[in-house]
Image 1 (cartoon, rainbow, N blue to C red):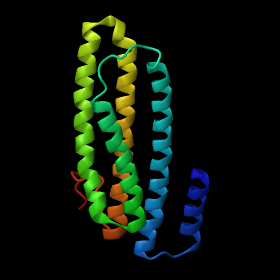
Image 2 (image 1 turned 30 degrees about the horizontal axis):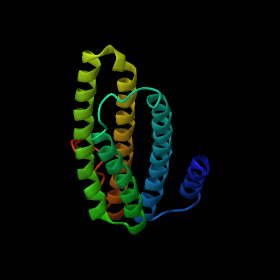
Image 3 (image 1 turned 30 degrees about the vertical axis):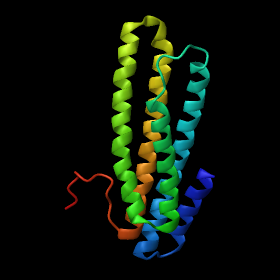
Length: 167
């Protein structure tokens, strides 16, 4: 499907003189398509890590992991809703949620590294948990990219790299 969408984007750009809003939409859809493909890849990575984790005793109580998973899932759901509804406010909420996901990632990395240093028997499952955490954070990043594309489609404002001088 990704290839079909990319081909359609090229065809639209080559054959039609698109107005600004239509051009933004076509470009954003191409980027969104790529982000959705990456989200799928991250989900596969999580499933593979989960299978390996289940072969070992729990490293620690999984308190923050379900919270991070819920946040990432909600971000993807809200990002897709924001695309369909062209909802800039929802897109901006996703950008704020990404900060919380990043904080959880940092916290869980610290905790898991501490467990790994304290007990060599948990190194493998803790490392797999780190991979899951990283993949969840990347899903949040891709949802954030989609939210940024919504803002671009609706407002014509590119908020992907706010520190870049665009003069």
